[in-house]
Amino acid sequence: MEKLTLSSNSTDYTTWLQSAITLESDKNYEAALLSLHTYNSLPNITEANNKFKNSKDRGKTWKIITISKGAYEFHEINALIQREMIANDDYDKIKDKYYIDIDYYKPTFKIILDISNEDYMVDFAVENSIGSTLGFTNEKLSHGIHQSPNIIDIEKVNSILVHCDLVTGSYVNSNKSNVIYNFTQKVSPGFKVIERPSPELIFLPIVRRPDIQSFRLWLTDQDNKPIDLMGERITIDILIREKPA
Image 1: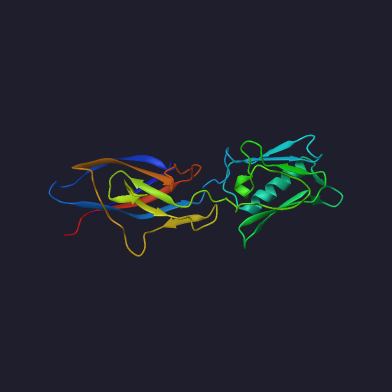
Image 2: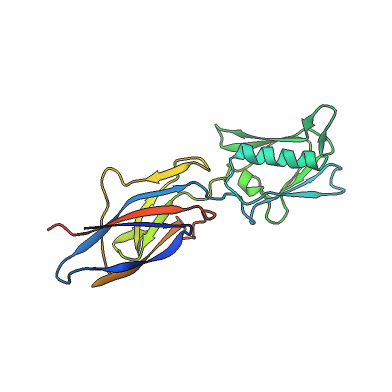
């Protein structure tokens, strides 16, 4: 029985062992994920959805707020946009009131966008707009209270799949795969992630013989797209054992 602890700042990495693990040719072996440790740093705002286009003169001139890549709660997006509006002199100084407020209505999972200034507008048709993340389409919005036509889409990743090229025997969407474990984020951005199979380990047959000198681990989402943890360290424990008779 061998336990391997692997740590990296990448979500796709190959580990080379100083001493190869030798598997006897007349025996069957299997592997399981023991634990995974990292932090929830999955970005939900990237270069693809980080633009907020706005005007305070009914569309005569426009400004674009660019949000830095990161893992945001919806209220943090609202606070960031409002801070930028202060910096751009786009708020009511006398009443100390913002021209817009973004709120989340939990019963419907939709966003309420309140535009309080009669001359203020928001344009979600801009390229790389944050609109779809907030549940809006390509519309332009003016003074008034607006509910997003779609539910908020701030969590882009439904499931994280841990792949290991040592094993086989799992299936993803009816296709044979080397996913050794999968899980869903249970904590908010910035919090510690600790994953352990429960109630028992899930072993898959090892396909590499006779010596294991190196192996690859990588993480994808439910659509097989690479997971980006923005350089956060991830530590994974793998157990290798002879398959019980």
